[in-house]
Image 1: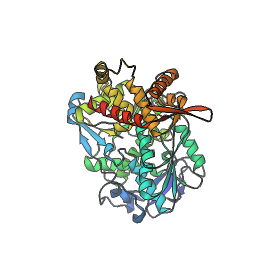
Image 2: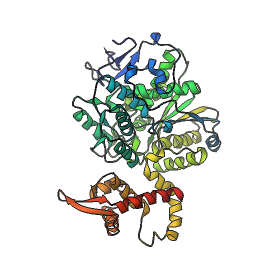
Image 3: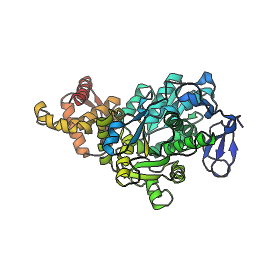
Image 4: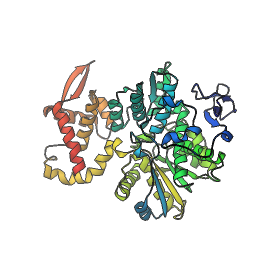
Length: 475
């Protein structure tokens, strides 16, 4: 065993060396997680940022550390939002301040450093957005090749990040669950950086809790947007380890927040039953679009052991919470993050959280990664200005054409795939009408490949796309 850390089975208790990375126990098939010889770990941390907590992480040689300045994100006191919601002590753990603007940079720095330390030249990662962008960025910095497997439903802003960092991108399945299966098949001796398949993810994400403790102490409540369950459990694990180090006497109550139409953990919690995969998951908070959460059981354990709760919020309430946060605190977050704010409104109104208690909401990533949010937030203004701009008379639907141009700016595509990327909010016939209209205006061009009619964006289309982006910001 390593001197201070080792992998331990949560089922039978079997122990394994810290490396090589493995996810499940050879003896009983249960998940493995890292644990430590806490008596050998000091009670103070040195340095700054994420790697300040190296003593409470699996070992990585200093020479192999790949860092872009992640961690050390602010814990903001939300004074204006507190007044509007009626809670005295509200804090926002602002992970948008990480290098690629999401909390997943923590996992990327640890996994890519580990990959470099072990001599890997290529990493494989299945992701529904944020981690794919993070892995691509840190791999580029380390000089390691990255292959990111994404589902068809992924925010274009995150996809754009992967492209610019020169990752190889493979599309597989409708949602991330299918991409994960593909990542297992394609790893082929390369480093597995898929969060559900690498327990280092939990270790990296728990540093959020360590920072909250050092910045404030232990809040009464910690609200966590949840897809696979790994984030909620990792934050709970972080506070448990602080207790093991005898630095705290209590943990916060964990609140798991999920979208109404994709809430397998919340449904299991409310019904006091096992988690059942969602048959037809749906939400515009694509970072939380997970049908069968790999860490669902452990996330439920965190809720129950902390005497917390699990709640589901509708997308409409999430968007309103997004607006409220931006207007109140000047922080623009992705829909997944806004679910925490939306849930707080509900929990306060129901009396489950009292106005005198201290609440921390985890803000996972910036709203600039989810382009549809910009369109939704600007919709009212666009509607009121269309007549003046002459756009309605010319048959222009700004949001749909903008989305199509953004998609084609990332690569050539055909009608059916473009329709799927619009979340099927309009008919496929309408998509083709938009494409034909744009082709007449020389914004796109079509060509035939493999018996399909593909579309590509023109230079004029790129100029129009840039102009439309600027228009949305200015209106």
